[in-house]
Amino acid sequence: MALPVFDNFARESFFHQLPKLNETCTDLDLGEICSTSCGNDLLACLGNCQNGDALCENSCVREGFDCIDGCPCHIDCPAGCQDCPADICNICAFPEENEEHIKCLADLEQELMECIGNCGGNSSCLTLCTVEYSQNILDCPCEENCPNGCPCPHYECEDPEAEELNSVLIMHGESGRDPALANFQSFTQDLKVSWYHNGPDRLEFSAKEGCSVLYKGRNYLFGGWYVNFEGGKEHGPHVLDGCDIKKAEGVSFEFDCFEGSVGQTYWKVDDEPQPFIMVYDGYKNAYRYDGSEILEVLPETTRSHLYIGGHIPLYQNPDHPGDLFSILLGGYDSKFGIYRNSVEWLSPASGWIEDESLTFPEEDNTGKGLSAYCAVSGEFGLVIIPGRTSSNRKIWRLHKNQWENIGLVPWTSFRGYARAVLFPNNEIMVLGGYSGDWMFTKFIFNEDFTSIEGEDLEHLPSLKNWDDPYAMLVPDNYCVIN
Image (cartoon, rainbow, N blue to C red; front, side, top):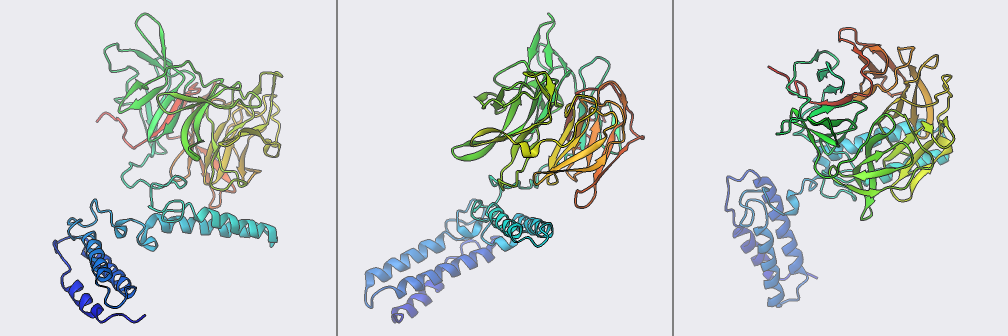
C-alpha cells in the first residue's frame, strides 16, 4: 500500500513539533535515537491506515507523540535515562557495547576453543562443546536468560563499587592469639577487631573449631560461641559486622567445624536455583540457612562425611552446564567405622547423588583416606590440597569430571584443619593447621590451570597450632589501627 498524501504533512508536523524540553540533558544522543525510532513507527502506522481514515491517522499521531514524550530528555524523562523506563535506557539496548556482555562472550569463546582443542577431532565431543557453548550464551547479560543485564541469576556479575578483597582476616579462639590480617606481602595484629561483643553484656567470643562462609557480601561464622560472665555458652551463628563480631539475627544452634562443614549452596525456589548457606553436621543432616533462619531440612546424604575440613565447595558438573552443585568428598563413614573416598553432590531438583565416577582416585597410606583437606573451587574446577599427608603430597584437580594430579604440597607432615583462601587473581593462600609451626603457603597455577606450585612465605610469621581458624577475605587495611 502506498503511503497516503497526509503522511508527508504528518511527518513534517511530527518532527517539527518534537518537544526538546531539556537540551542540556546528558542523554540527548539517546533521546534522538529514541525519537527517530518513534517517528519511523509513526510512518509505519500511517502506512497501515486506509486513505481518508482520519481516526486511524489521528490514533497513529497520538501514539507517536506519547512515544516521543517517553524518550530520554523529553516530557516524561527530562533528566535523561535517570529513572526513565524507555527501552533505550536499558543497559542492554546496545549489547555490543555492554562490557559484561562482551566479557561473557569472550570467556565462553575461550572455553569453546579449549573444549574443541581437547576433543582430538572426535565428532561427538565437538558437538557437545558447541551445544554447551550455545546453552551458556543464553545466561550471558543481555541474552535470553538475562535480558536486562546485570545482575543475572545465572551469571556472576562484577560489582564496580565493591572493594577488592585482597587480605585475609584470621581469628582463633585460644587465649593469647590476637586476630591477624595477612596478605602475600604483609602481616599485622594491630587491629581494631575485638574478641568481645560491643554490646552491654561484653561476651567473650571463642573461635575454636570454627569455619566461615562469604554469603551475600557478609562473612558468617559457624562453630565457636560467646561465653557470658557466668560461664554459659551462647551459640551462633555469628557475623562479622565492621570491626566487631555479632550474633547473627534469628535462630541459634550448636555447631562445630571439626565434624561438620559449611558452604554456599544452590536450591530451587519457584523453579529457579537460589543461593543459600548449607550447614552440614558431618553425619547425614544438611540444612538450608539464609543468614537468620533455617528454612528447610535438606535431603539426607547417602553416607556420613565427618572430619573433611570444615568447608563444602561448589563444583560445576559438565553434565549439567550452567549449574553449580555442593559437593562432599571423602571423610569418615560413622556407620561402618572407616574413611572413604566416595563423592556426593547435591542436585537442586533431586537431592544428594553418590557418583562413583567421581570417586577420589588415591588411597592415603595414613589410613585416614580423604579427610582434613582444603577444598578450593573456581574457574579452574575443584582443587584438593591434602591435610593428612605422610608420603602422599599430591594436589588433585577435578575438572570436567576427571581427576588429575597437578602438583605437590611443600610440607611432608600432618597439616589437617588448615584453611585455604582463594584470592580474586586465582592465587591460593593456605594458613594454619593442626600440631605444627606452620608458615603461610602460597600456591600459583600455570596459565591453563594444569599445574600448581606452592611456596612457603618465609617473610611472614608462622602460625603455631592454629588449627581450624576463621579465615575471611576482607579489603586491604581492614580495621587496622592507624
